[in-house]
Image (cartoon, rainbow, N blue to C red):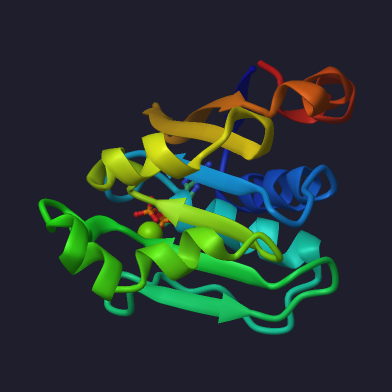
Amino acid sequence: MSLLARDAASMQALGEHLAGFLQAGDILLLAGELGAGKTTLAQGLARGLGAASVVTSPTFVLLIEHESRLAPLLHLDAYRLEGLSYEEARQAGLEEFFARRDAVRLIEWPSMIPDWVAAFCAPDSTWRIAIEHEGAARRLQVLAPPAREPSLPNSLQEWSA
Ligand SMILES: Nc1ncnc2c1ncn2[C@@H]1O[C@H](COP(=O)(O)OP(=O)(O)O)[C@@H](O)[C@H]1O
Ligand SMILES: [Mg+2]
């Protein structure tokens, strides 16, 4: 599904809406260059989940856990994991992260850990979201887990363009 968020507030509101479709165990892959709006979308998702704390960019902290109403929210920024060996990535906490099926898991920069994504992101629980600039706005390509795809378009009409 292709969506348009015209500004940061619209991006957060979209995240809040999408949160209503999430389940514990879901993984959201947020792809896009620096400045695309990944963290902004994550902030909306967290708000929609009823997170107790505010989401910031975890670039300098690998992983942040937020308590929330639905399930714990784990926010991983994989940017600095590029090129790590399996053992190094495991020691950095990736294995534990992917074992947390009790949580909703957000990954910024999934392209930095392709082997882990291929191994652990099952289609029935993985959302693939790619964000790109479109003028001053942002275009999002959203690929939802198949079972949840049918209910999405109606509720996201505000962003369809
Ligand atoms: N849909 C949007 N339209 C315009 N600007 C946006 C949008 N979403 C986010 N921004 C702005 O883009 C900048 C980068 O956002 P951020 O979420 O930090 O990106 P990333 O985490 O991908 O590096 C911020 O100033 C943010 O307010
Ligand atoms: Mg970010």
